[in-house]
Amino acid sequence: MEKNKKQKQQFTIIKDDSTDGHGGYGMGSISLENMSSVIVDPNENKAYVDMDAMHARSNIERRVRYYSDRNEVPDGLLYWIVWVTVERGENGPYYAGVAASELRVDRPNKRAYKSMPEHVTHMEKSLKGKVVVEHMDEKSKKLLEHFLQDFNEDMWENTSDELKDQLSN
Image (tube, rainbow, N blue to C red):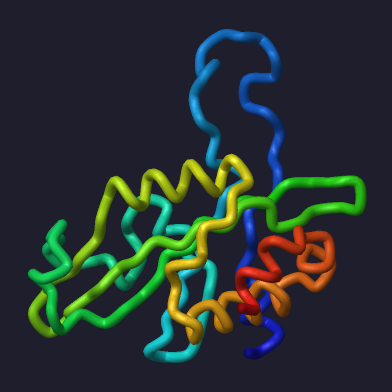
C-alpha cells in the first residue's frame, strides 16, 4: 500500500465525551465517536477503513436490494464489516472492541444479504470492548490481523492478547 494512501485512512480515536458530565441533552445516548468501520474483502485480499459503512453507505453496500435471508443471495460475494472500537489505556490507544458482521453482495443481480440485528448487536459488543471474530473465515481473519498490525503497530502492541489470539487462530 502506498504511504500517502495509508495516511488518508484514519481510525476515529477517542474524542471528548459529548455529554461532558452535564446530564442534559444526549445523556444516555450511545456515542460512536471512538468506533470505526473496517471492510474486509477476501475476494480482493484487502482490508480498509470505510467510515461510510457506519451508516450503511459504503461502496459495497450501495445500489443493492437487501434481503434478510442468506438463501436469497446464493451468488453473493463475502465481505465483512468489522466494527473496531479504540480506547486509550496506560500505554496509549489500543483496539478495545472488534466485532465482525457478515455481508454478501451479488452486484450483477443487485442483491445483498445483511442481518441488521447482527450488525447492531456487533456494534454494541465492539463498543463494550468485546471481541467477536470467531465466525470469520481464516483468510478474512488474517487480512484483518495484518491490517490492524500495519495500520498502527503501537495500537496493536497495546491490544489484548484475546484479540491477537482469536485473529491468529
